[in-house]
Length: 249
Image (cartoon, rainbow, N blue to C red; front, side, top):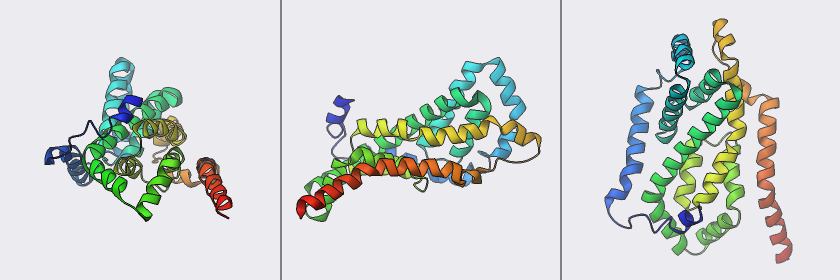
């Protein structure tokens, strides 16, 4: 990981339009997917194919696990609609334990794919400009460097931050890959547990002729712990800010 951090910028092409191809491809597929796949990557599709999916899982468990992770990686990497459906499906097919492991693994791989696509493209130019800037931008850059892990954890834990934003923004402002990968793996576990847990009881929901109620994610018993973790992640930033004020007085 340390070697990757040291070569984050050196490994990227410094000139030429070719370095923008990965990010451009992701954006293009994301737009096309939004208009063409949102009706297919849904709970209705899962309900209609539940018996076939369960039968295939029972007959070819490892193949199903590999296919699930691969599809989930594509959904995350290209910011396609259906990430919530995929997370719930993980619990439905594999249970809480393995379902969470598969969900976190796939989401992390997809997030890393977006990170590098952005880092090798726009991220390289933006980071160089930030490092060469002075004044407010330079202060913001310094503040980010001093609180990088806390900020990255906040991006993962605050429910209002879209997942693709938490994947794209760090690459554009030049955070260390090591810190991005670490906070991604650990930061998405709480949310993954909640979605996977919903999926565990999905069969009973379908049997009642209903669809999963994801609004429960905003219930106090769910959102409360997530906000508590967010506050914990923000604590180092607050402490440093208070110490800085006292030192400046």
